[in-house]
Length: 201
Image 1 (spheres, rainbow, N blue to C red):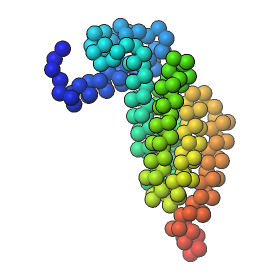
Image 2: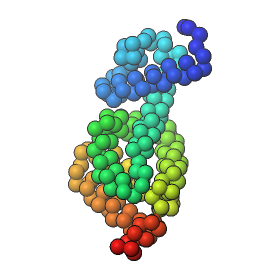
Image 3: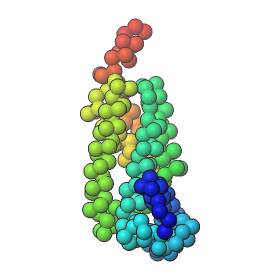
Image 4: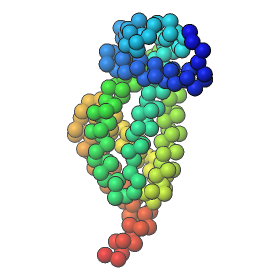
């Protein structure tokens, strides 16, 4: 095993987690063992065991890492102002399903498994904190208090994930309509610029 710097070690581990999660998403969680993962990654089983204690450890770590990256990918597309908000709400569910649908399906398969449920609880506690921080970043851009934005983000995420899992157009559209109406009310109530623009029309 070559000597790696800490940065090289972490970069290699992240690469392996992404490839392993991709392999699970493509071929399924059950029946995909260390040897199959190693072949997919183009490495040996021993190399995987260098980074992970066992298959369960690999599953838990790769799921947490890759789904956190999906969150960042999602929020990178977040609107920068009110004018972009409606486009974002309309487009993001379909983008999510196309780009990350397999990853979401795998995530729920992992975290609803009795063996990994406690890890899922911890992961979603982190999700709660991260989306609250995202809402705080959006507060200044949309003019809406983050306490109001946080539950709106969760409604949108739930709608996106449900559509990615089941392609349920009826559920998606009903959730999006409620979300848009709620956001319109919040904008009218809290966004000073929008209120001023309406008064001058």
